[in-house]
Length: 145
Image (cartoon, rainbow, N blue to C red; front, side, top):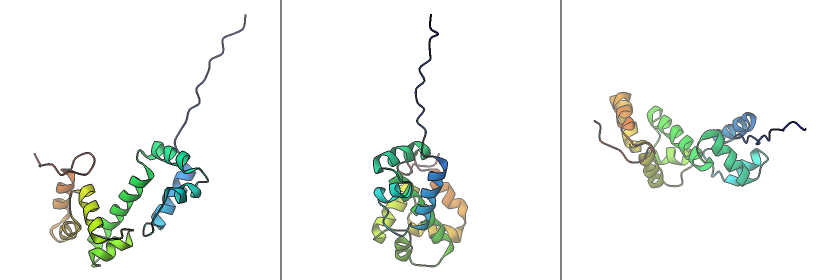
């Protein structure tokens, strides 16, 4: 009688930590450029489809959404710490037009770029309160309760 062998299912994890660090560093240093999925996948030496699946598994978001959120994070930092124009900040973080930048910032944070800049003058608590009242996707502002 042969002992029963247990069939192990392969565990498919997300992107290995070293590749994730490499690609996120690449994204950070190239925010001002257009970043295509094929380019990001090439950094990790993977096919675009395989890279996108493992990246999402590792981070919880698609590569595109990750890049957009990193751009918005960098932009809000610039908005509060510099006196550069909104359109130059938009270009510096990879947006072609100020209007697309404004729309994206508002959709994700619930505030316009001007409001982020004004938040610097009135204090971060007002900005934090406004951002905290957005829905889970960061898109549609909800009323404070």
